[in-house]
Length: 266
Length: 259
Image 1 (cartoon, rainbow over the protein chains, first blue to last red):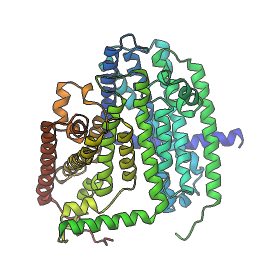
Image 2 (cartoon, helix red, strand yellow; image 1 turned 90 degrees about the horizontal axis):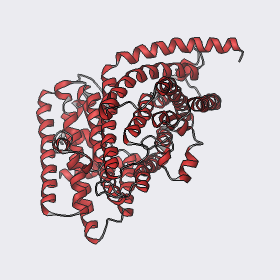
Image 3 (cartoon, chains in turn red, blue; image 1 turned 120 degrees about the horizontal axis):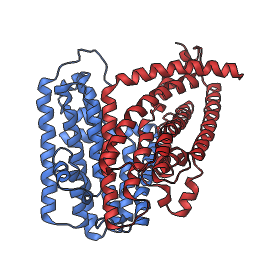
Image 4 (cartoon, rainbow over the protein chains, first blue to last red; image 1 turned 135 degrees about the horizontal axis):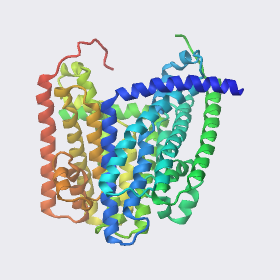
């Protein structure tokens, strides 16, 4: 694709992103539900880590930093829209055929919608998460530099997640139900991403596997800013690399899937 | 008579879910894997910290195992319960009202979820490897799972019954259900007095997992009595809420065919 062609796709995807963002803003009940879930998770883990800190004084990283780490990783995970189900429904119902005639390729249209949705979720949950984490710890362990980096890196990390969500949705071309693939992805984020425990606390062999996965780049990378360990530029570069790999994967899976799609009637 | 009908309904549901054999095994196996991976969180934590307020990795395995098996049993037996509010709100109880069987049982038990089997198996595996099971506790384990499943199903049904009065309450129901599950898989010793009041009332995590697990870990008659009382009370609340709500139910006025 030429640079001009790419520019056109980006412009069209941005329009779809704006529409999706406006739609998301109108769904207040769901946003409140997610914020409550976020608050409960942070509350549970604040209790867990304060109990650990009391029983094992001098634990590193300190409990307040771990809670901020979890606030960041949960912020990224809870903000990611679950698009695989919608994609699966469109494929099964045959609606994809109608969307193929639109002036933007289906994967990029979906990506635009997903990113628009994501930005609104991240904005709302980011404010809520900052407030909850501050209330529970009474401190903000991130310096000005880390605070300035955490938002763009968090958005980039969640965008990588959205791209992989698309690829998972497109496995519906072959699978009756793509949810099992999503569950594996979700648990990969949970375990290898270090959603609830920083990777620095993992056994050495598991940490060595985790750091090479996209999961660690998405969650642990940003989370380390709260632990005072992360190098923002390096985190950003790794995320960009996974974003590019993810886009390539989406294009490949979609092309292969489309090639074996049978459309009938309508 | 009623349990024969329920047995046949269950058998039909199972046959239907076995019909898509690959999907069935895939969903069950991946749910089991899902749970075991979630449990890795505790395993990682306990490799660093040997004990947390008297709880070791084996104790948490029993807690998670009983909660997962109880949840799985409700998914297999009452797969439609998470959809009850939508059925009420969309007027989908109409065809059930004309049947000579329990409307509630038809609404929640006419569907089964294959992933529930994964929850049951992984729950039993976790209890099995916990090192907390001996000849006595293994007898108490089925009872603990039944109590857990009864309270969980009753709490979910009672929550969904709010749709009779308030209409579309799906988002709040989802949040409260998630809250119940979340608090059920963490040791109760992490939380203080005010939270414990919550666990015995609005978010009955104490009856879903904390007390059933206490029966297995350190059996005592008062604990068993309290757990049984909780199961009976929550079962009663669910039945009362559904039957009171049904009086307010408004028909969907829709024509359809029920397969």
